Image (spheres, one colour):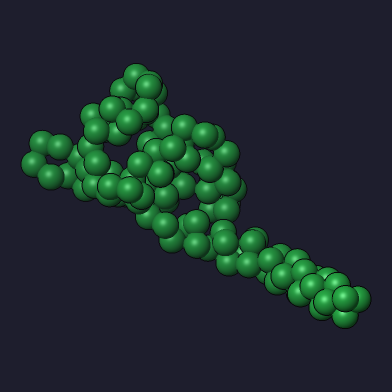
Length: 106
């Protein structure tokens, strides 16, 4: 599986996106802290975190006896640059052209 495919697979699930949102608001959360934000068992949350780690979206760091999870936005930025940025230019130009055409009519 390519890196892009792993990221898309990870982002396809709503629970995983919710976990990324939690880490975005407060980075460096433990599994227990993440479970408190999602109505799901520890095992289920841990499984989702493994998918996010495999995609490179989450990194972990041991702090004493706990394991902190951190958001890594670099793969999302790469997806944006590869798949989204090039497509947003054309619609923006089309909207600008439409705006000018409508303004000329009035």
